[in-house]
Image (cartoon, rainbow, N blue to C red; front, side, top):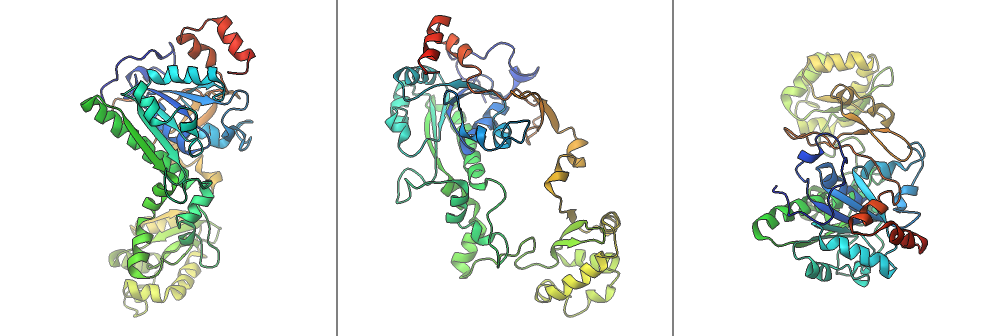
Length: 413
């Protein structure tokens, strides 16, 4: 992507690692009035690629996600996950002075992101129409719970609520116990669609010179991800069965426990693999032609009998021995791992996916971005404290120490 025209908010000297000046989005400035997960997740993707992200936070307390927990050396696990590579500017947006500063920054920025409550951006004078009249090249991206119109536009939209409303809970868990997912799925979906929308708008701006107005909702994003069960139910008449780690139509599929407690995940989906599994792993060649198990539909119909046979065979094996048998038979499998095992997963450690990142509480290890691009290194710059960069950013706008001190005294920053 071509670099945007120089802005009046230049990148501070010395920021980033040795590759920062060569990242794809170097030269792009993002102003983000963000909190919680969706918007910070979107802006972090841009920051990872070299964009300068100025995070606007409430003076003193900052993004309320900073207080979700204190498990990462006293910092919030949510916050450290999605706020590296950013600068923090503390601004009271209810004060005229705070809004004036924000308008000055936005006037020369490339992207503005906000996930205020519905209607709040417009009431503050930060709506797309007003800001893009000041800066026609601006890409204005808004994230809401349910969209800007419709009967739910003003509804509270916490992640778990949206998971329920979008139907995700109805297809997750077991028939007895429906469940939400263990991660902020709606927030992540909206954040990724906002990120990809911004990249598209930046690319289009290189051709047209015009900015864009983007609107993404948690609900629409998650309903899009619900495509398979949605169409299955709408045209099939019934929703997919909630099957835990099992499958609504395939067997054997799911987690099976070995004698040492190791859980092995199977997902056998074709007859050749089934034949190898029955013959080489279970040592039961008779099951290949047994009418209960000789084809996929029959195996699913007799899945409870099949499960008992597999569990009996696995109970005599350690996880390591079972892995070896499955590997030798070329049967697709994995281990069902607890989160306590993931940090030391060999696929992460042997590929050097962990990198040190500075935080207000000292360095922590963080995973590198998942997309690897030839010739481009990973940007792993610090996670800021609330307002850590306020003075330097305001100095770039021409304010002297006295003016900045007065803003601080008045609670504007």
